[in-house]
Amino acid sequence: MSILKPTGRGGAEGLPPPAEAASDDTAIDAPSGLGHLRKRPGRLILLGLALALVAIVFFSFPLGPFSVDTGDVLRILVSKITGTASGASAVEETVVAQVRFPRIAGAVLVGAGLAMAGAGYQSMFRNPLVSPAILGVSAGAGFGAALGLLLRLPWAVVQLMAFAHGIMAALLAITIARLLGRNSTVVLVLAGIVVSTLFQAFISITQFVANPEDTLPAITFWLMGGLGRIQIGDLPLPSIIMVACMALLYLVRWPVTVLAAGDEEADTLGVNRALVWTVVIAASTLMTATAVSLAGIVGWVGLVVPHLARFVIGPSFDRLLPAAALIGAGFLVLVDDVARTASAMELPLGVLTAVIGAPFFVVLLARARKQWL
Image (cartoon, rainbow, N blue to C red):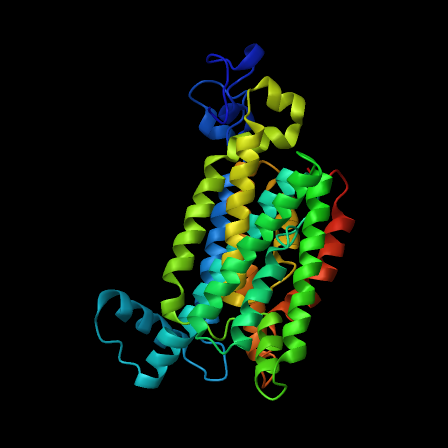
């Protein structure tokens, strides 16, 4: 069964195909051969966001307790790509390539994943207050990591437990919702709240029994979020999962745009709502669990960034996804820069995203003069 089934070239009841109807890149009323003169600025905005992200990433490398000259950063990065000598000291190469590169790459991955997951959840639930934590994924992953740290397991196993428990929490919430009220979004949200509360209680138990001298601080610091422990070897598998889930979301971009317009439009255009809902929720959940397993619980990114992306580029899901990914990646890299440089001690990432994200979200809501979608 296809996700989107228009009738004939004109679509159901003579409507244009979804890809043509939902795209804003080219004006519909442009004369033949002159469409390129009427292009809307969506692609230019995305290009600007991409260039801004590249600039943010590049200028983040010199920041930190050990300062590295911008020119040395560029030479080191080029040398790692080409295999030539950089001329920089061994300490500078170690700091740039083995400390800051995985950290910045992790920030890009986590920020983009959480932002796209938030955009997917908000579009499917049609609720501006929905975030990636809605199904209890963050709490479940937090408990998995806390349990692994309590048992003093290797760091790779701790990350795996965080990922597995995040998925388990989401499946538990969906199972409860289907048992209590099939196809009810409200029941699913309530089930997510119940599961999240349950796993938060489990986290409290692990903190209560943990050794207060070493294990408890490790659990507490991880739960507040941070990128300091990410190494290059931690990135390949999460990157594959993230990219695969992002591709899935982009494949269903047109049906999601139609669903956001309302059930009548979706029925008219033959959208398979159950299949689209399953794909979006599954991909968003996997991205959230992967992000939490890498960086701990980092809140507000998946709630605030999709709103900012809608404000910048509009609600059409095909443009919202890349915009949210670019803004989310840049936002988290900048917040991590503050975490590394604001004080002698590294500040928790999740605390900073809350301090910055909460007032920023209020400003976005105040500036929004129309419905969020």
